[in-house]
Length: 263
Ligand SMILES: NS(=O)(=O)c1ccc(C(=O)NCc2cccc(O)c2)cc1
Ligand SMILES: [Zn+2]
Image (cartoon, rainbow, N blue to C red):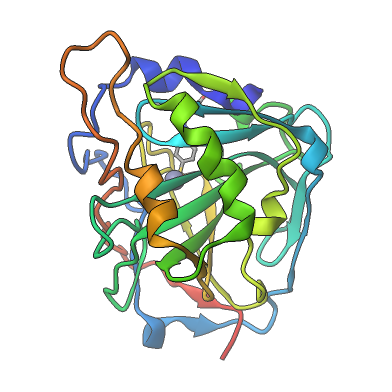
């Protein structure tokens, strides 16, 4: 799909070498969400998502995370409402996680780290025709961030976990169908924080309306352990490196306001 981003990601330096500073970037992500400093905005509407599991295409290891990709050539998987003025199309979702359950998320809440974070990546299909276009524009992307906590097993996640051994190495891809991204949403998606930020990996473009859910989802310790069995490295490389700690450190707020949809 347009957002498969094989080209761009593979040209980037293979390992995430730490918080690459963007000269002059003052809307960078992720950030710490200081709950008391968030401003309640009663104009924020409930989020409206509509996903079609039939449009799920593949799951692949891009050398930094694993992505589940959807056919984004039609408006089958849409997100609107919330802070969004336009309709956005899901192209992929992926995760960030740590080597231990003590850290791994990109955003933090009052400096609290979660073991992992899920990102559902959407692009503005009202204004642009391709992900590649939208990613360069201020209102181009909308990413839903959902925190993961270790607890009970997540039944919806298991189908995805079972597919991971087949994509252990960088650039491995397998067909992956009939997966409903809605199964990964928390029960309450009306309570969220929202702010303007960036991609958390190069090219770090400041084109993202972030929508970070207040309610986390729970996955089991064993399910998260399978994430850590993935490798950053391709099959040919002599030294194999575990895919862990694939998160960016929190960036300065630089005067931005985080709004909340709840009091
Ligand atoms: N972690 S994140 O959700 O901020 C995120 C989402 C998508 C991407 C992404 O698609 N990167 C590849 C890319 C970027 C710009 C242009 C492209 O064609 C591809 C990177 C980070
Ligand atoms: Zn991400």
